[in-house]
Image (cartoon, rainbow, N blue to C red; front, side, top):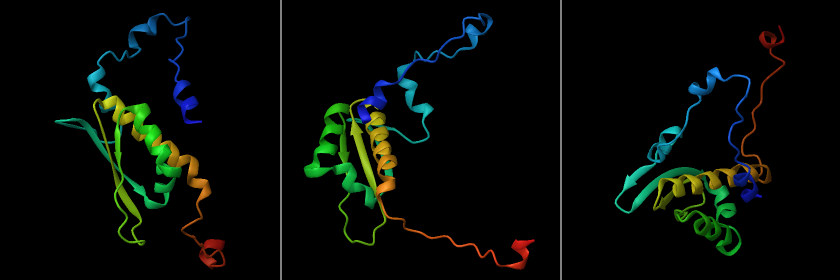
Length: 142
């Protein structure tokens, strides 16, 4: 369950034997700098914060869920708005999902949940590519 993954966040244990290293433990007290720790861009806009992510269209059905319940639940729990693009033709492989929210934390939380949904449902999709290595080549056999 996604909720269980978020509740399992524990602080790093501090080793009591090394009192010398207590000064080297980073303490994150500046909440405004949270976005600098991620490998994606969170933009500050007039209405709050915004991030965009490219997602294969095959995952849209898992993100939206039955009758839109999954998307609605993520929006309600994170306080963000998830905007999925309309798929104009079936040959489109990826779509850009936009996530808007009042705080950076809301946007990052919604994006993380979408990434978790992608990871969990990757096994349910059929393979799209097949890679073949010719092992009967003399150079490879040597």
